Image (cartoon, rainbow, N blue to C red; front, side, top):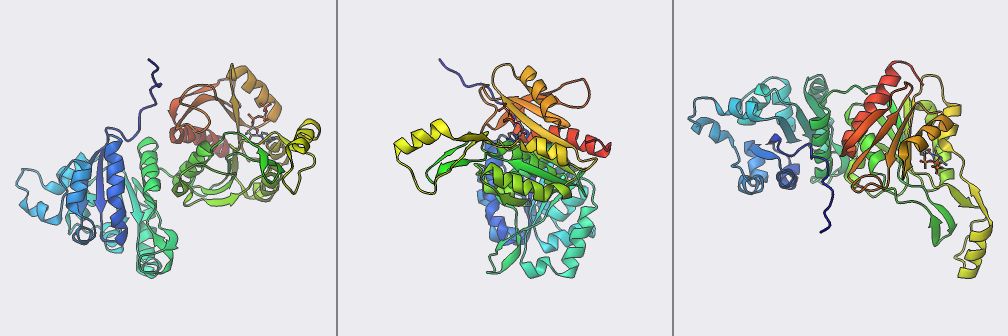
Length: 420
Ligand code: CTP
């Protein structure tokens, strides 16, 4: 019997997660999040403010979490020796506060504990992922902005500002809660790395996904990269406080994972080269995760060719796509560390060591693409991180977000020490 390899453990499995829901229409998305968390093996308990309970059913949340839901009235009917808000606050290993309404934000940053959720937030010592959601005008009102600003200074809090989009009040603007898939990714990041924003004030340029070289409008040469590793790296850096510019080819990742990043779509190696030239000067560090297609036809055709013409083109006219990573290294200003990637089959390390010497980047993450469960398109990755020192850092098999955090820590250390 053929058995699938066991994947790395899910960082959210077995964790005690308290989901605090306050009164914004985005509350209707929370059952999806709660259901996903329960399916991933997390222990989930939901606490709703009175207005949240008007918008989303505590009964549905109880079914999806396999736990009863908690409301304000429970605080006063609770007869156990310890107060309910303290019990729940201490039970939680992680708190997801979504949506965070203007009122709940105000209560929290001013230290008010006049509801079950508000007093849990004051009492808990667990890290909190707080995802704001409200009408655009409310979000840009001076009181709310000042409160949000104040929250940035809170220890143990990972604040996730609202995104732009069409709001339930028919306004187009900022106020939409982060999508459920981004909440799950950010929660995973909180479990793996915590809330520390060590990349705050730093600008990271990331490339991700494949490039494509077109023979004619119907055929191209490319590779199976999905962009998952590069996007995980970009989002992890953003959650650690970086301003991220992402240059990406065609991606196969959840679009929610792109929220909060400055994205520029590219297709060919030439387009990537042009965008890299544009964005390199402003970057403090660069991660070159794109899988650049190596060759392009000398004479791409504007119209679809017949098979015979295509065969002739395949036989004759190809040129190498310039090595963009090498160009970055040659052009870089002092103190701009660069992380490269190397995907190999077979004996990875010797091939990667030769590539590292050839490319001249500061770090090179070498990963196998012929191991089941890791590499192109997989949820997990593994490999070795080559750096300036003689020691090679092993990157064990883990989810791509965990790998991303390990790589960012190494890149951030080089940036802090002025290397690159
Ligand atoms: N890369 C690049 N420009 C290219 C090819 C690759 O900038 N024309 C970058 C990739 O983004 C990656 C690193 O170089 O960071 C290594 O890419 P990889 O495809 O593993 O290596 P190649 O340089 O293409 O060498 P080979 O195919 O011979 O292994």
